[in-house]
Amino acid sequence: MELLSARASTEGPVSVADIAAQSGGIQALHRRVYELRSMGMNFAAIAIENEMTALDLSKR
Image (cartoon, rainbow, N blue to C red; front, top):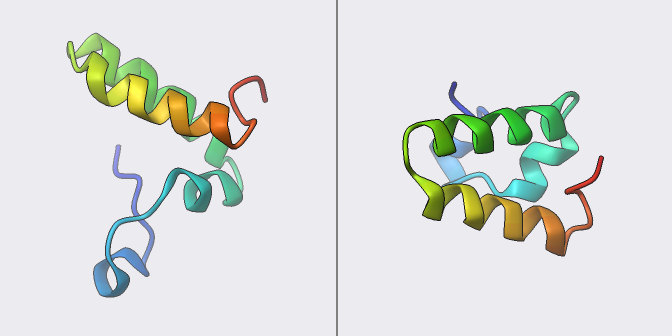
């Protein structure tokens, strides 16, 4: 699953906050964390979870 918006191609990477602000974004972030963990990429999953916690999004 690609978590990039149209603006990513011209302005750089999309943040967790950018994704969360989109319709269905929080669910997409949770799915991505699950996918990353299933691929053994715990460091990336933890990074997303930490950003979600900092934005108080982890329980939504």
